[in-house]
Length: 283
Image 1 (tube, rainbow, N blue to C red):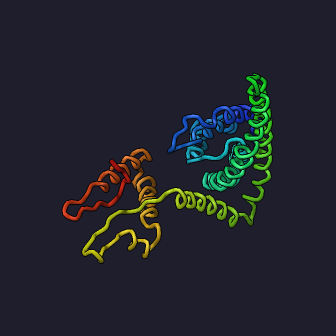
Image 2 (cartoon, one colour):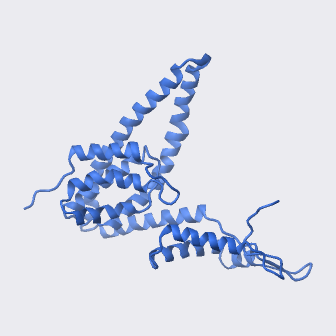
Image 3 (cartoon, rainbow, N blue to C red):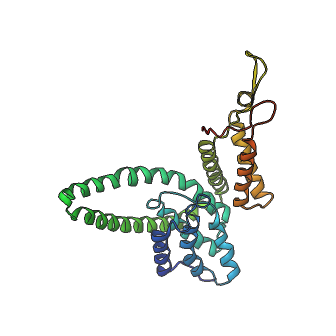
């Protein structure tokens, strides 16, 4: 029987340090923390796999979109290190399940971290630091920088280690004989989170309006709302998904396509004095 692979302490330490200092590496609106996450997982993958093709396949898992509150979200990185360890040992752990867990956790942990860290903890530290800064006293900023960095480092280290430990125990629930429904549920939750983000943050409406008489007009947006509210938002999300998954078009090209559609849609149609989209500009 082959010896079970285990992520070394050195690899976990390097992974954690990469995340704590580089979670916003190459940050963009398209990828956000994706590359920081990928960089943090490289020491784990290097430690678990010998063949380059196995490393490449494992790292592809972490090229999907990821964004959460970085302090509390450290637990997700530790968790996936444990799950990657299980996959390297031949457990029934695939990329879909790992990404389902990541997508399912990043939203709730972001909300938790934003309320606890950003909304509560940081303002408390800043309040104390501002009080100490009275009269130009340098003790205030020194206090904030020292206390924040010390607590952040050890708090994130604790979260990473707890996530790694949980990853090992979670495998039993995820790969056991009764785990098929659980794995499907995890993937479904991740899909729902992405869908909820799209429904919440994307709002596309049309300004197309035909005025027949003073009392009679055709408003396309009202008609679409009567058929299916937020139809255009759904359509454009579906269009982006179709272009990227079915036609293999890069996200950058898809964004350029949307810009072209928006620009054309803002052109006033001759003869009826209306356009598909209203940019809301005034001169």
